[in-house]
Image 1: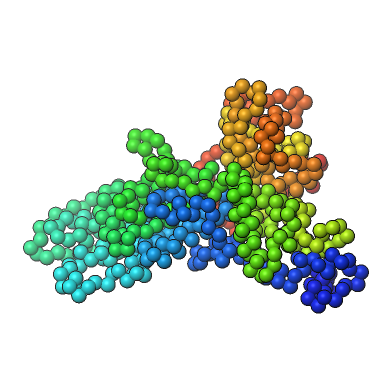
Image 2 (image 1 turned 180 degrees about the vertical axis):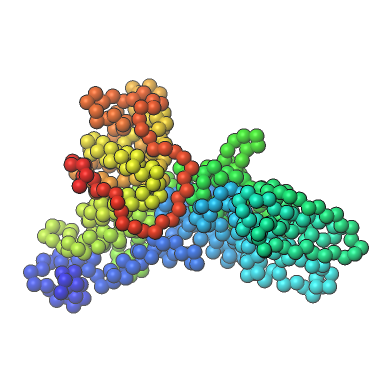
Length: 564
């Protein structure tokens, strides 16, 4: 019988194992409910579009995000953006309001304006589904007598839906024919019908009563022109639909997955379309990969604090106490569901290290908790005091094991930038080991390095601790303070002697902690801010598409000896 299974059996039967120490009989990670706990931890890391995660704990900012206003939720991958949006969707449904969902991951490969057409189509289909769910299309008896077909709200929404489907399946730059009728009393004909060459799904034109005055126009236009010219007519119908159920929310998940140049166009149009309709945008994205507003004449997009408020789930270490309490509440809830005390399973130092190693990201925190338990179960209790619980060493070991998967993700998410990013991560790891510090400073005037740090934050290789810190006698220079991903430090065996004492300001206002690319050269001197001598990761509009898992071709690196 394997050692772990034998220990579990002993735990249940209370029969001492031959040669076992006292601590082995009390090892909490051999509790019979641990297997179920490991399953729950795994399930808690996946956002299910059909239900709220059982372990979901509303983060700080949830109350703000649930208000009737436009909000953009910023957070790293795994921080709980989608879970928060799903929670808001369920709240909105419970209030019998409109909920419509736009998942930008589905539109990653679409060019503009096709990506916008698909977004508007999702809005309309979501409205139809919501009103159907709330039984708002069923006419009253008097309405059946008085109402013309063209005045029927459902028919108008379906006409818009049909027109948008024609646009969706037409070629990108294909001209479309828009037959637009204006009558004295028919709203349906005012919406018109759209046809495109090779697209069979076109909307028929409603025939009007003979005594109505009709003006018919046939417009040959592009997709963008149709969207702009029909905006006011579509908006009127959406407003009428929204008034049936006291408004609602339109969710835009993973905005960052569409090209950066298209993001402000999509947000700007949706904002104009929904303004005044009592439908509010709830957007989830990664801050460093979001382009929500472009100034100009006219400006394009949605401006923070003017058109949209932000909810920050990406300030983990800026609000260290709040983030730690939030993550431990989630862990306590999950562990407690199998009748185990999480403080008995993880010692105090291990819980603190889980926070650091995860970068304050909820999904990474739960994955590390899962893997740390498995590490502890693999080695079992020893003679060292406290080995019957998950320890700091177990968390460090688990963190080191996930480092290769992060590098694999890098290859998938940013293949063109992967080599430069990997080189930067390795150099930063060397720097931190040399300085015996898990955190470092970057001069904010070093534009190339700052671009690199945005990419590293996006991919969770580094985490922002403080902005605009200063160092004595460095004139007016300001520095951002970052924590290097502990998975990399552990993987490269660079944890020994490394300190994480950034909370005291005097510990982070240290000149030797300023990173610059030539730090390891024989004549290492800080480069002048703004110099172009360093190689930086190229910043460009990237499309991050989901990939099928494949065997990694990324070499393993050892800090001392290079490639292994």
